[in-house]
Image 1 (cartoon, rainbow over the protein chains, first blue to last red):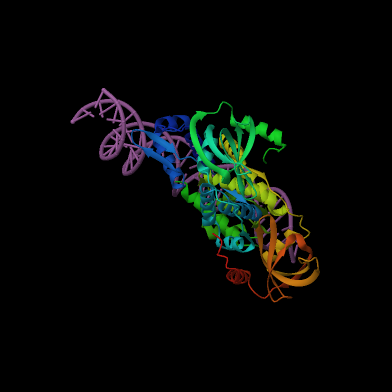
Image 2: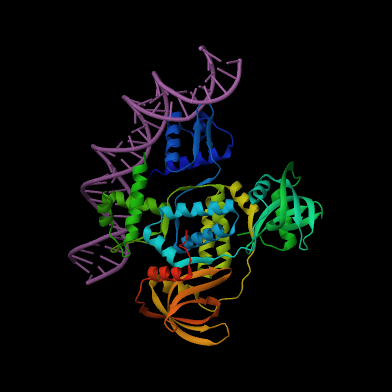
Length: 231
Length: 231
DNA sequence: GGCCTACTGTCAGATTCCGGCAGTAGCGAT
DNA sequence: ATCGCTACTGCCGGAATCTGACAGTAGGCC
């Protein structure tokens, strides 16, 4: 079997993923247990299969953030669910995530057999998705702050239209119906608060990391709200 | 390169997909240009990779309906979009499709590196999805009728609560906000009509195929409603 | 029983893969 | 400009793997 080879390519990819900085080919070869010559061939194979690996002389290899899915079998319902869900995200989410959904959709559609693709177009469709309001805030900025656990300085408009300034520790971005909600610890109120992104007048990223870990905040918030963990 | 082999496995899978009835190994071997012995090995490889291929002595091979995705690279945003969309489908759609979404989610989560999986759990979540009302109709039955282009006999409750009986030609299932809508040609009104699935008191599948093709109906309906084709 | 088929074991030959060597080229620092 | 580090390619012999052929077992269909 060539199972050994594909296995090796997968571990190579995962090894490459762990490093964020450039890694030399020699190091990768040592970790995967092959010679340098073979490693170059393996890298070429991965690139041929669509992996975004960049190599520069004098520096090493870096893998663009993302993930390679191994070959997988999906049933009709599963494909239909993935496509429908992606269409919903493409219409509902913020531009950055919506673009991701559209790209994923295009990738999947590109490898789908024509008959199955036509079936999808015809059998399930998203008629319309109402948008409550346009975001004032930069959702990409919020997403970045969440990923890196950094504080945000907000100008927020509450229910009555009053503007308040506050520093918050964002740890999640939720979708409630068609409204996006940032969930964060609010230093002003000393409690968890939900902020509708269409009411965030401005969000400024601070360079300060908040003193608690995101998963912990999320867990406490879930307990307080009585929301079970995601499937 | 082993590119030849994986290429061959992919064409084998696609060949197998074209037949709906059992195919003998000899025929498959001839079509892919290998010996019988190698074909058995190839089938075993595909099964090891998760393909749902069933072989029975005296009959041949059949591939369960579905599709195998080749290895693909997804960016962070794309994976996040797929996961978020699947969660939405799992909560919003009918049980059959929801189960498909949950299964797809589980498959993706199973091969995701732990750190990325945790990132997804924390950074994006679906807070809640309101359900307007429970479906009275069997959505799976409707989905089947659409796929096979069969007529349905409905008992439908209109806006004022009046019950009407009608024969329709269903060709699409839409999602409008959190309400599912079946789109069909109504023989009673001689026009296109939308039927909210939570108002369909009963749906009986007839054995009759409707006289027009689904894509044509869909196209005419789109033109009438001014809805552009799906991305 | 006869026919067709899925499967497994074995084995020699064809094919591919792997490691080592040599050489070219780009990047950064001294 | 020179040196060290690195990516990358061509080539070749030995190792590993894959392939095809044959033989044999087992299960379904007539």
